[in-house]
Amino acid sequence: MNPRKEKHYILYFFHNWLNQRSIIFVDCKTIINDSNTIIVIKQIKLNIPECNFIRDPQETKLGNSILDEAVGLIYEIGFEAFTFKKLAQRIGTTEASVYRYFENKYQLLLYLDSLYWGWMNYKITLATHHLVNEEDKIKTAIGILIEENNLDNDITGMNQHKLIRIVQQEGIKSMLSKNVDDVNKTGAFQNYKLLVARICDWIKIVRPDFEQPNMLVTTIIEAAHIQHFFAEHLPSLTNAKKGNKNVENFLFKLLNEQLFNRSNLKKS
Image (cartoon, rainbow, N blue to C red; front, side, top):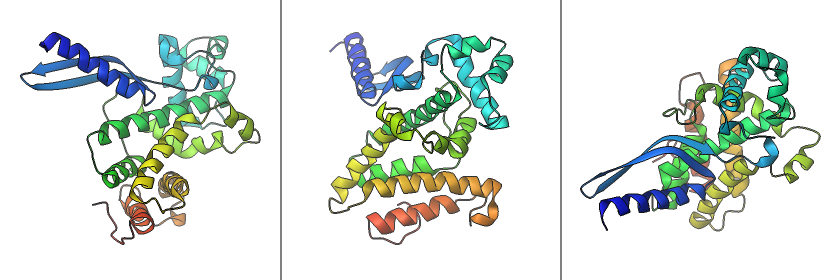
């Protein structure tokens, strides 16, 4: 196969591979050097359930500004004080423009939550696609999900640190609502469910006799979020301290004891 056709084939294959995981890359290039092919991804687009927006903000310049500034504003003042009026003033647009993308701020929170879980799925995909052993995949995925400052190159186009903090502090509010059953039926939590199901599939291969894979995965994820929050704001409720690895070590100990029947504290 000549280099030009090989480049197109690899690009097509990699696009399909990511798209199966609810990820589309917008800007990338391949570098072919002898027998080695390197794919450089500059920007990605994460698939978000359509019920979480009126118009997908990732598709326009204004929409991306709405996402960027919403993340910054919610991070600064909290979700309760956040309004579309304040967001519009911050961007320098009209409140009506924001409503063209989202029905209300709750739908925006659902979008940001889905964006985060899509991003995590992307990171896990890249970190595990070359691994053969399912145990290694599980530990790698869990490590990504519970790390306090899990940042990478800015291919998502927004402040990742602030998005992580919003999901840790505000994300659970997207589920803890009176109408959660109706929201769930729309598929709003699809990205989170897909990620959990993926890790559970690996668990079923490693331990087909383990009866609570979903419970274990979601407990570890949500415990990481709340313990990192406690370490920063309510330190008397946790043994973790900001900047240390107590949360990660504790949760890997839980994973090892529950799933692999081992008592070592850290991932191997």
